[in-house]
Length: 165
Ligand code: PNS
Image 1 (spheres, protein in one colour):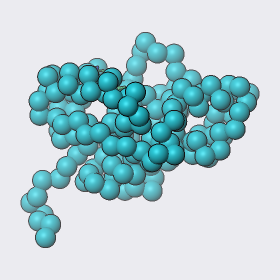
Image 2 (cartoon, rainbow, N blue to C red; image 1 turned 120 degrees about the vertical axis):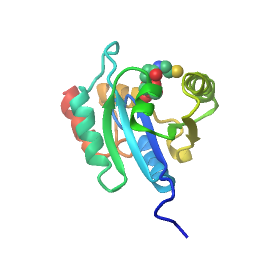
Image 3 (tube, rainbow, N blue to C red; image 1 turned 90 degrees about the horizontal axis):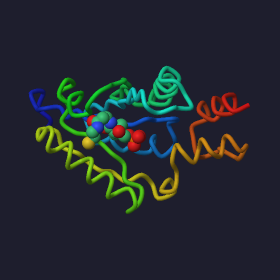
Image 4 (cartoon, rainbow, N blue to C red; image 1 turned 180 degrees about the vertical axis):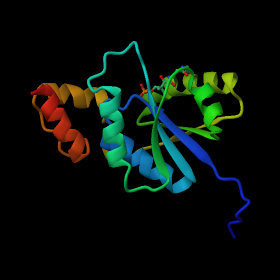
C-alpha cells in the first residue's frame, strides 16, 4: 500500500517544443502515468531562431497539459542537469521515436550522467503512429500549407495557421 512518507518521483521532460506535437503529448501522457509529478521544461535557447516565442510555446503547452493535474510547464536556461538539481528532479524523461534518435539521446544521457550522476535519464517510446512526427516537419508542412490534422493539438494547429498566413 502507498505510504504517505514514500518518496515521490519527479521527472522533467525537457525540450524546445516549437511547437508541441501529438508525439510530445503522447509522451507526456505516458510520463504522467508513471511519475508522481512531471515538469515539461522548455529550454530558453538564445541561439536558435524559433517559430514561436517562448511565451507562445508556454501558453500552448499549458493549455494542452491541462487534463493532467500532476503535469506543470516551466522554462529553464543553462545546463539541464543544473536545472534538474535545482528542482530536485529524479528523472530526465526523453522520447525515442526510432533508432536514429538513439545515438544523440544516448550521448546526451551519458554526458548528463557524467555532469550529475544523481539524475537518471528515462527513455520512453511514443505510439508507433507518431514515430515519424517532429516539430521541424510540422513547421515545414505549415509553411507549405499542408494538412496538420492529427499531427498537433487543435490549439497548435490554429496558431500555426495564423503564424504562417
Ligand atoms: O527538443 P530538443 O531540441 O530535442 O531538446 C534538447 C534539450 C533541450 C533537451 C537539450 O538541448 C538540452 O538539454 N539543453 C540544455 C543545455 C544542456 O544541458 N546541454 C548539455 C546536454 S548534454
